[in-house]
Length: 403
Image (cartoon, rainbow, N blue to C red):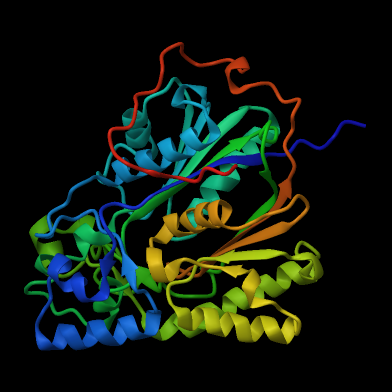
């Protein structure tokens, strides 16, 4: 009987622009030093637990990089970690909340900057869970045998929309100010292959699951419309740009009153995975969960302990406090750091979990650590799309190298 085709994560990379920005430095980058804004900022930072984050902004708050550049730097780090070039890829799946331009798609812009050869591209839009949607697509194509190797990247650059100048003259409540002090910039990437790494540990992708509950919930996180629901004549495309800007349509907003409900729905989705047998809590060795605030972590711990009284919270990995909330990039940035800094052994399992507040969707991926496949052919033995080499990186990137 033929073995079931699967896919493996064999390279990991992340990129965080500029030096870390501490809580007392945020206002100097984004603006907002008035008493009211300062009070809101301190309240939110006390709750979310973030101590530092990164912005692609200089000391004056001016952009230093494009979102596509963040993505390419993370991709190059992952390619370097695997020891291959962009020319070795056959597919590029990119996730982001908002690209740099309206058209072309984000993946096309990233491919153009990354270089390499001809490849399939996919732009996964949405919010936080779009990165695992992109991973699901790449894994599926590798499993089908359509491509031997693919790259997946999640990248976010919301800081441009969080600067004080974007809020001037706009009546912005907590729904808009909340995300100003929550979101930051960064990118994370993985390499997907049809076989394990030939000389070191890899992660087998057992499954990826994504579910939307939009049919049961109104919009929670939004931009581009005048109210909480989209209506004909009430979106940014129905107005002159100046009118849409003056109406605050371009501000990222989140209905914070719905976040407790989001956490409860996320726990219910996890319990469904356990009930259906996709997750065996007795053999779950590591959990990497994206969340926007430590409050959600505490809620999750409490709910999980009801289900798993022996839960060891040391299994839970998050770098929210030091890397910030980078949206769709967060799960890959966390995975890269965990893979680089923690000890993993063959047979251990990892659960990736990503709740998305946009209109309530949740994504999970189950991974298993596998030993190297010493008999695997070297990367150069696979056919290339082009004989030319990928352009070398001119910016620094943190690679997830693992011995």
